[in-house]
Amino acid sequence: MSLVKPFIVVLALLLGACGPAEPLPVTAPPTNTNPPQRAAYYLGNAGVMVVDQQTKLLFDPLFGEGYNTYQLVPKPILTAIIAGTAPYDGIDVVFISHAHGDHFSAKPVLAYLQANPAVKLVAPQQAVDKLLAAGMSAQAIASRVIPINQQTGDAPISVQAGSIQVEAITIPHSGGERFKAVRNTVYRVEMAENLRVLHLGDATIENAPFAGQQAFWDRQNNDLVFTPYWLFKDAARRKNLDAHVRPIRAIGVHVPTALSNLKKRYGTALDDVDLFTRPGEVRDLQAAK
Ligand SMILES: [Zn+2]
Image (tube, rainbow, N blue to C red; front, top):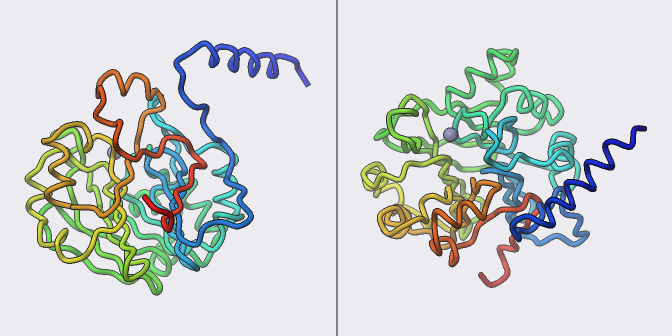
């Protein structure tokens, strides 16, 4: 074995020690032998696992792009997810918000579905098309995948994934014209009477699309909402959360790895919010907030 690699690791650690004071990413799966009954696990970028008793869901867990900005799912966690080893065993449903490389890549999703034949997938049609192009058979898709074919402003779609009740709406992707064609699906998944989990994908900062779905937001308690961090930036953006979605609890995801740069741009805006920043982090959802 060459000595170059350990040298680079040591160098990286030394350089890291001189850099901005940010916590080093946790890169291994959590090893708690007595895990909480109800919890959220951070995987990387907008990828999370939510567990309640025997039910386990993954959102945006398998992707290959960080665009040199966002947190990839670290290799040990990715390997454990695909192998279906604890705590990522017994997954019921995987949800995909949209077909962008920092949320979804066809190849690892396909590998995951092949290795875990009991798992169902709910994804926008644009992601399903990529699975087809990557070699997933129409027959396999029909038996395992629930495609969401929906546009902004459409009424919510309700689907059943195994025993799990799911509602979907489409909220535009952030970035306006540039990503106009991307269908960004927002899910509300009923894990329990008092645990409805929402994942906003890369939702826009604009208020109108959120206001246009007010009946959807109001119909149920939005107990746990995973939101892109950018909705926390200022009063105008927070209106989407505070006035429209009205989460009981919100956790920000999609945080760039350079947290110090983000803080420079955001000032104190993120100081009072809960953010997932280190893959492997766990929030015990039964503990006090
Ligand atoms: Zn995106």
